[in-house]
Figure 1: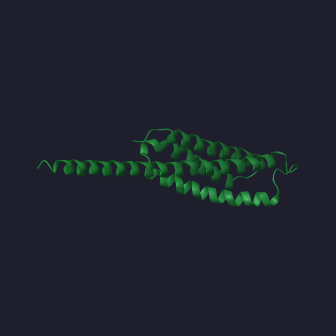
Figure 2: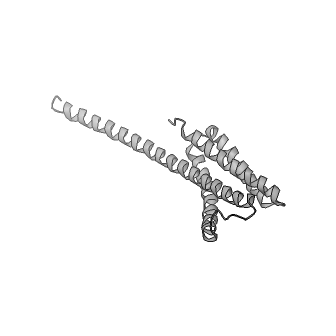
Figure 3: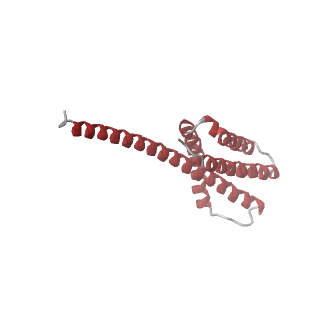
Length: 156
């Protein structure tokens, strides 16, 4: 039995080592998925905010000053549409990775952003459009703030 004791201890140690390596890898993978979702949400919300700030600036000066060229604006519009879809997708993915109680503020700010888009789509006069654009900018900024707040929480 004495000659088998080192082998048994070695096998038990290897089993514990493999178990802890598996747990660590799984934790790192979850962290990486969360990080990707957080960074994608922040990037998309900032892109939306920047596009609407540019559009609002151009409307503020009544088209007298062109902030971006026509081709640049077309490219930004394409990126903005993509960012809206990506934002929705990443928030849905994050709901699977983060506890519901931590998602409350982000869900509220995203809901406000969606409502701001709806108000902007239904906006009439230019002055009302300006207010709606400001609402979109503020709501997109709130999405960024709430996402950063969640990302700083400790996940165990």
